[in-house]
Length: 112
Length: 113
Image (cartoon, rainbow over all chains, first blue to last red; front, side, top):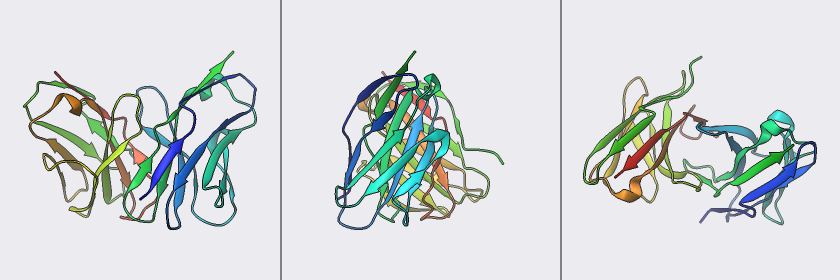
């Protein structure tokens, strides 16, 4: 069965510093991988996705993620964060069926 | 193009009551899925509708039911509400039943007292 583990529940970081949000998944077959962002009182918005091809995926707002099949990881990175990046980030996996499984989320808090 | 809209935004019910939540999908999308997001948790898949038929369901009891209409809008119905049903309910639409990108609404915050 699919599962998604986000290794950090909260990540505090100073503005303009780099950040990495970690995500591991388990699945016995090929998967699609996603990162979504949720701002307060809003729904989720897609940051980026990995379907196939290049393992380095670039998304919106300067975020990127790298798919590592051997480590079953899909960590999200940004070289320099802004105050406006403060939000909840969700890693998700989909096995090609109808069901997308989300991790518990990582709260990114950017400090001035 | 219009995005995914949900109504109402907030709702307060008492235990044992029934509730109906509504969702209008993004223009051109024929698939709607519903998620329950408890406080401090990630969204949990409830079910998905494709062209008015339920084509997938998560680990939720039968008192969670839904409908999809010919215009692809959708309803989520929950009977016999329990305190643990208090959560943010998110609707997401996509193009096709295998459409990988989900477009989310802002959700309905349900409180069960």
